[in-house]
Amino acid sequence: MGKPLFSTHVEEIRIGTLVFRLRLIDSLDDAIEYYVETAPDDADRIPYYAILWDAAKALATFMIERPELWPGRRVLELGCGLGLPSLAAARLGAQVTAADYHPDNEAFFLANARLNGVSSIRYLRMDWRRPALTDSFDIVLGSDLIYEAAMVGPLAACVRQCCRPGGVCFLADPGRARLQETCSCFEAAGFSADLEPQDDIYILRFTKDRDRES
Image 1 (cartoon, helix red, strand yellow):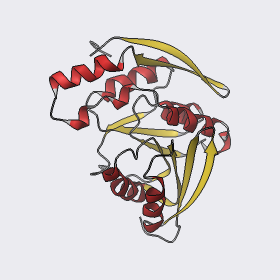
Image 2 (cartoon, one colour; image 1 turned 135 degrees about the vertical axis):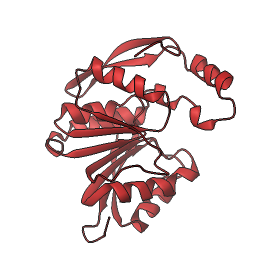
Image 3 (cartoon, one colour; image 1 turned 90 degrees about the vertical axis):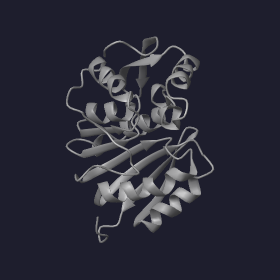
Image 4 (cartoon, helix red, strand yellow; image 1 turned 30 degrees about the horizontal axis):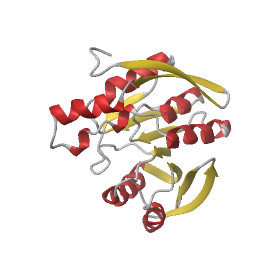
């Protein structure tokens, strides 16, 4: 992983029938202070990637409860951060690409992949506002991605581009204010929408119209 930017520790986390080992930061305050000092004018440097969000745990639980969905599927996780859903998909037999825009996320993610004995995941630094992918995926994943209004439209456009006709996007969200706007935006982009609660988190299932060109 190289020299860490701030102190970390490893935790074992059980999700359903699987156990994961994740490297987490010791102090979010220290991480924020580091970026305030090194990149005070860059909001994209806020270290959201270093936190294990409840939505990511809920999405991984949802996935593990449906093991038949994953073997052999091409899966993309957007805004992967620590990468728990990507790790779950790989452990369940999917071919996984994990993507995140933060410049310091890759080392964190790859360290977690190694901790879990997963070497097959492809990592890509990508801003979904300017998706750098020509591949088509069966399933697109995301957790807690719509915390800013400006993210909703580009996210729907990116998923439309990356998801094959008939493919699915699973988006986990804690019930943020943009939830209905997100559903409307995805429907306008050619997806049908379903809502499946997972504990206190909403799992949005967007299925791409088979007749809609990617």
